Every structure is written in C-alpha cells, then in structure tokens.
Amino acid sequence: MEEASVRDISAPARIAPAGEGIGQEELALAARNHGLPLEALRYEVTPPGLHYVLVHYDIPAADADGWRLTVGGLVDTSLSLDLDLLRAFPAVTRRVTMECAGNGRALLSPRPVSQPWLVEAVGTADWTGVPLGLVLEAAGVRPDAVEAVFTGADHGVERGVEQDYRRSLPLPYATGEDSGVLIAYAMNGRLLPPQHGYPLRLVVPGWYGMAHVKWLRDITLVDAPFTGFQQSVAYRLRRSADDPDDPGEPVTRIAPRALMAPPGFPDFMSRTRVVHPGPVRLAGRAWSGHGAVARVEVSADDGLTWAAAEVTAPGAHPWAWQAWSCVWTAVPGRHTLTVRATDTGGRTQPLEQPWNRGGFANNLVQRVPVLCV
Image 1 (cartoon, rainbow, N blue to C red):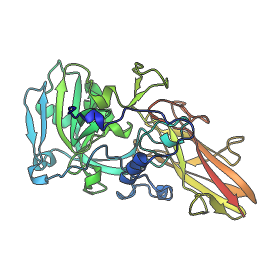
Image 2: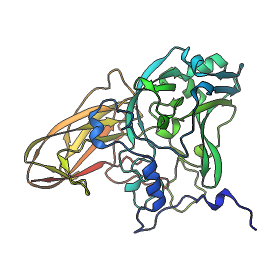
Image 3: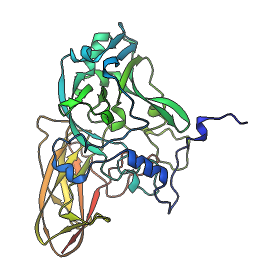
Image 4: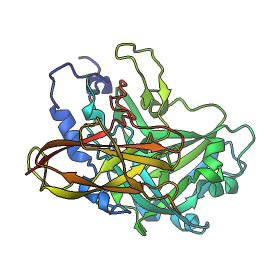
C-alpha cells in the first residue's frame, strides 16, 4: 500500500484555462469567507458581521482563560502573557481599513484559482489593543534581531505544506511608532469575534490582510529574514504565468482603491442597478496603504470622461478610508459608472488589470452597470 501524504489532497496553485467557471472548491471557499455588502460602505466604521472575513484553515477553539501570548527568540526576557497582563499595558484604539490581498482576483483573466473575490474584501474597524512596540520593549529586543515572526493558532495544509499560519515583519517597522502595529483584543469596542481572531490578533495598518495574523499566540524575534510558506511562497507578486521559479515581489502595502456604494436598487440575479432620470447622488469610500487619498474621479461612460468627486480629509484616522461623493445627472439608457482613486504619492488605479499569478493587489477600477428608466 502506498504511503499517504498531505500532498495527495492539497493541489498546487494553478491558473484556470479559458472558459473554466468557478468550481465547487472555490464555491466552498466563498461560502466560508465573505465580503462587505457594498451598500455597507455607508458605515464609516463597519459592523463586525459585515466586515470582510478570510479564514485560511479553521477558526480555532479559543479558551480566553488559558490563552497565552509568548514572546521569545532574540529577547532579553521571554514572556508568557495572559489577557489580563496584556490589558495592563497602555491601550490604544486605531481605526484601520483592512483589505484582503486577493481582492479582485475573480475578475482577472486568466483567473488564478483560489478564494474568488470580486471587490468586496474590505472593511474598517476600530481596533483596541497594545502597541506591539511596548510588548517587545518589555521583552528587551537583542541587537542581532532583524524580524519578528508572528504565529497564529490556525493550522492546516496549503499546497502540500502542513503549517501554522505564520508571517513576519521587519523589526524597524514592527517597533516603529509611526507604523501603528497593534496586538488587538477588541473590535469596535467589544471583544474580537471568533472569525476576527478572538482573543488576540495582529493589526498592521496600511498592509494587506495577510499581515494581520489572527488568533495570535507567539512572537519570535529572529536574526534572518523569515522564509516560511506564507512569506516566501504565498503572497508574492509573480508576473509570469508559466515560470515556477519566479520568486516574485512580496505583497505589502495596500494599493489605492475607491469603491462606490451601488446607487438605486438592484436586479436580484445580475445586480445591475436601476435608477430614475435626474440627479443621483453617488458616494463611497477610498483608501491607500501608502498614505492619504488625494483625488477621486467618477466616470459615467466607462472611463471615457472623468469628473472630480469631493473627498473628505483623513482627519484623526490616517489609516482609515475616506468618504467621497458627487452628483450624477442620470438620463434614460444603459450606463457604466466607474470610479478611481489617486493617493498623495501619485499612485492611481489602472483601467486595465494588473495581472499576477496569485491574483494579488488587483486594484483595477470598479465598474457598476446601471439602467436608467
């Protein structure tokens, strides 16, 4: 009898051939995970049940009374902190927009086979917890440490590799006051929901969701860049469709994006929006992990012409999305509304897809079909 292996059940990454629709395995992923209903863009702070969710493996069973966060590796003093000890540190609350790195993947052609996100994998929450730098300062980081590795309690198999979910951050960024990295234990003023990492998670403002390790149980300081699966195999921007040796570039900060809360009312199946002639208020949110959004533009003719929208300033929440709005005068017929954001660094959303093999950081402009009757 052949020896069984997890590789027998764990398929390698692949690109769907032309004409292949969403398969049963992708539908199963889509049923486990969910995006933000776009009408919920009306909320400045997303209710937890509407915030996007991506769970790689299983939601762990977490006993808060027995939970410990260990801090070790290249530190002067190893720590084992229960929740009461963590709450004894000074707490801060930060409003952070979080977006899945695979947002927009299902719109790509050819399509990478994975969680089939459209554009809804986003949400904004008020996260409360302890600045990571305070915990590392209490442990005493040794001079030869270069990265912090974060381990979650979720365990599974991916592309034949059995693993705990692990990611790392460069130490200067992990401890920098400007980075805002948190060990969070509350979301919107309440304990973290199970699907959002109860009882502890990492929050890394400005970075895609893969960096925000949920169900956090260990931090280890190391003297060389971490090369675990989620760091060096997954979450890489590989531009070639057929070069398995392409190392790619790491996925890090969120590319600029604007989303529109769909106007009018929808057809049940097609989701095409229906409006009546006359002034129609268009509104939504825009964000970038590289800084504030400087400009949002809206088109009613699928990008042929553009008009500027009003954009709110980031104010007291530099890591959260910004509201935008404008008025469109609708006339009878079919229209494709399009919206794009540009940040203060000049980065803007493309009109054509920025393709890569994993389907990451695809910030192609949103297009909203509308029928005016």
